[in-house]
Image (cartoon, rainbow, N blue to C red; front, side, top):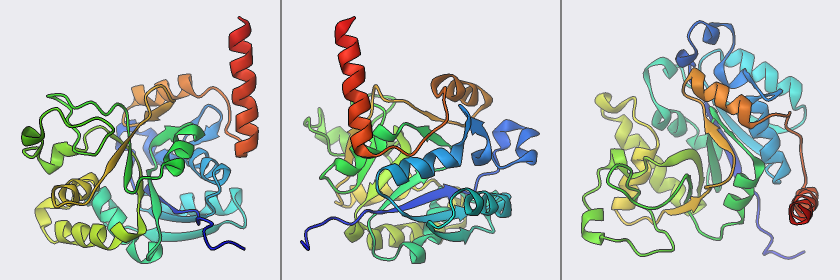
Length: 273
């Protein structure tokens, strides 16, 4: 057997949020257990991962953690899941949640998912197929005055000097919440997250702040433009409605071969129109 076979990364899902943007509905069930297009949001993420060959999971839980754990254990019997609980979920951000996953991740490459992102499996396939390390899924990678991204793209930066002035808080504003982090970057990332969490004033920081600080210090991050593919980050009731309109059917676990056959059939049908 070849030693060159690449191991699938660990999937790290941050599902600590209270879903306060859904109002009273959040008290009835965790936001990630709400249904979109006939499938629970968290189920979509897990099935997309399984379709791509990812079989090891780390779930960081907070709000109504027992309900989420029971759902996963009942729906996905037999998969490898490590649960981590963030007891400070109501007073901390994704930086704290990701830091708590450090021991469970170990020295592995991992893909981090925000649990409120609904996405089609092709996004994850493209991310895993990328030969680059430290890849952030972006909805467009062209820098602009309002949404500048400090990552490496195929095109040279239009103004490298100006690029150095980007603040960590704004540097990854276009990231959708799905990132692939190389094993060799993990130690530096968790050290950066720990340093951020040492400051009580930064307890609510998102994990993207750590990516930005590492990038400023010379760690390369790459953008994967997912424009044209379906995804919704659910932060409001309007986002939830948009996700239901976009994803009209339940998710299934689809192999790469099946996906290629579906794409070929769709392409052939389009050409015949």
